[in-house]
Every structure is written in C-alpha cells, then in structure tokens.
Image 1 (cartoon, rainbow, N blue to C red):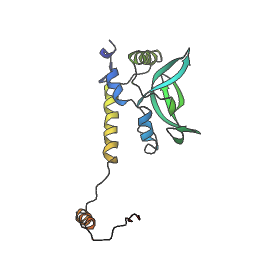
Image 2 (image 1 turned 120 degrees about the vertical axis):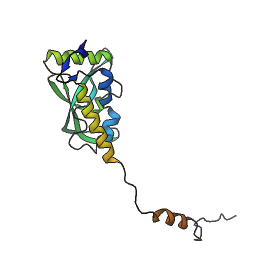
Image 3 (image 1 turned 90 degrees about the vertical axis):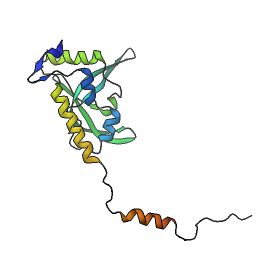
Length: 175
C-alpha cells in the first residue's frame, strides 16, 4: 500500500485527505480578489480539464503553484487576467480557471497522479502538507470575518427613528 510508505515523519495523504484541500471554480471565484499573491491557491489540489477525445473529457489532478498573468478572459461573468499555474508531476502549465472542475477528484485520477509523481521521482502530498494547508485556510477565514460595530448606541438609535412621527412619503391614489 502507498500509505505504508513514509515521507519523513508524515504519511502519504489519502484521497479523502487530499479532497479537503481541493479548490474548484466556485472557490477560485471567491478568492479572485482576495488572493493577490496566490498564497491561498498555492499548494491546493485542482481537477483540470486537459482534453476531450471522442466526446469524453479527460481530467487530471494537479497541484496549484499559483497564478500567472494572461490575456483577459471571462470567468464567471467577470473579466480576469489570471490563469492558474497547475503542476502535474514535473510538468507545469497555466490554465484558465474555466478549465477547473467543480467535481471531486476520482480514485483513478488520484492513482494516475500518484504514479506520475513516482515516475518523476517526486514526493506526493503528505498528511503534514494537508494539515498545514488547512491551518492556512483557517487563518485566512478568521482574518476575513467582518467586524461588528462596537457602539451599543446604534441599536437604540435605530429603534427610536423607526417610531418617529415623520410624515409618510406615500401618495394617495386619486380616484
């Protein structure tokens, strides 16, 4: 079993662990304005459409290395100049984010990725890699929470203004 192998002090991650750091099109769209330097996306897993043959789509699991500048293109009703730099083994290639799948990585795609990593002599993702990425996500989410106003007077002001005797702005219908 692949998971019996160890990478230093950490085991090779299983598919269900890898799925926890997968980014899809929807996630990338949310990060588009917030992830200026690609720090959130870097190290995530993505399922990328790499080709179509006989009406069958071929996807590959890859590791995101960050963003690359490109010609502007439409992504979810917005224009962007970013392409996702995706690494499959020792090959890296930029992809428009429209090519990133919203579906989970399949077991076959995961096995194919593991075989590619082994054939290139590269280390696959480990449980430590996954834990570190999850900590980074948690840190990002906690830093993005909206802050509530501290003044308690806002709640009393809004209550008193709603019961004011100001004239109504409605017009009466003429008959």
